[in-house]
Length: 240
Image (cartoon, rainbow, N blue to C red; front, side, top):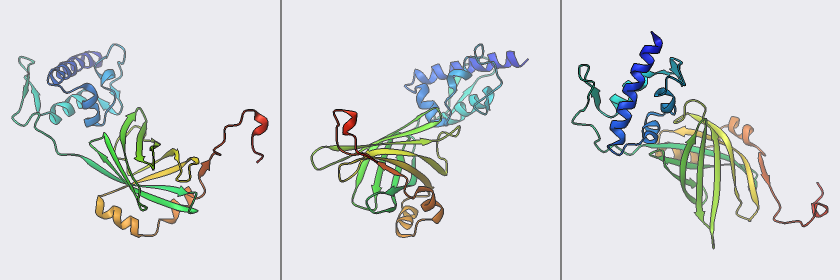
């Protein structure tokens, strides 16, 4: 019985996905909006026969898609119909985080305000006068932020990698690492912690407040820097 239900529901999912694709809504866009990355498995019950995939049944995923895009399937004809509100422009979605990191130069934990806009664009503002722009991407259990700022002569780039787990988007706390070039020109990498906040007002309150001791203890001293030398042979490496 489960096999029959799986196949029937999977076929409905495939029909809905085709319907949306014909209206310029890709499968990737749907996955991003639903915070669900297993649509390919859901629509392929022959290869993935399990009833629950990524904590949802096929029926639950189908209903999520129908509800989100204002669609319904006629039980008699199996045709897809759209409501009047289907495909109306959606409001811009912004998630706000405080990013904590250990500052090698100041010997203390620093912080920055991060805005993730429509799961695509990223803006990062530090307490010091630094402003970064970047891109947001989720791949399986990991979140990546590629950001850059304009340096004195050339752009400076930063890569942030966070573990997001099965809940791909919007976790209250995220842990990960960053890799960049420091203001003095040295390559640097370290641990980072993202804490979700309600918006700009709470972010500014965090900027003006003392950093939680637990965060300070977690991040203290967790930065690694490399020398700006290119040795020709191993003997040229500096002694530790």
